[in-house]
Length: 238
Image 1: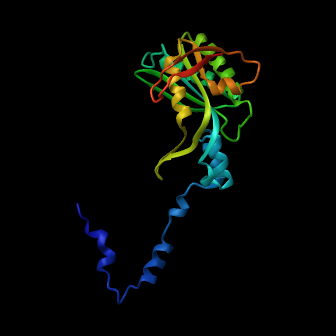
Image 2 (image 1 turned 135 degrees about the vertical axis):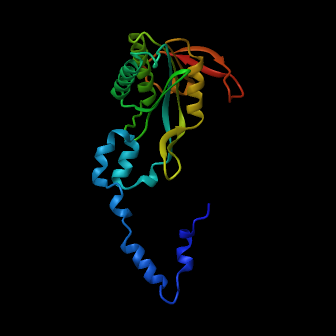
Image 3 (image 1 turned 60 degrees about the vertical axis):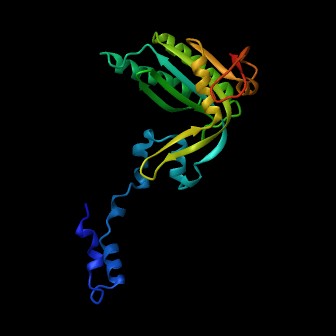
């Protein structure tokens, strides 16, 4: 519906109200700056902002947060937890805290945690700034082994897919709502390996096995076909 107050400027008498006068009046009574979030208040919401983004905001260099970098990705699918039950939400919170603890012990990042009718989904990333290491593939595998113990402790079923490769790391979304995430072939493959993993089993790609340090021994499995790939993909079990 058209509103007449949208056309106030068009109905003004130009002989009385010049553009500089109107511009000055709008600047004088513009209070938007007073309501903006101040940098001094940033620590209040630090726990809700990924470290990669927080450091860029703090330094005033948020425009450089988008980049292509080598990362190791873990997709975890969990089942056996009914969040609609009386103790479900508490168990989900305890599981989340335990996965976070294991992830942070290896200096990784928990990027997503989702629950729907198909179960739980975790997305964890190793190699995001400021926590970047030359042995991130090793850290991802060791963290996955700890996740297996966590799921066993909660008497839940988990499936784990680990991949390593060059991916987009940055923000997605509009100016009103943005989210820091990771995108790319490496991320998609991790999800495919997760769906093919056995219960409480870990599958990783060739890149992860090749760049892991010597303390992890891998067993080569028969290549599998996954959606989005023309040929069979070599897979390994740590």
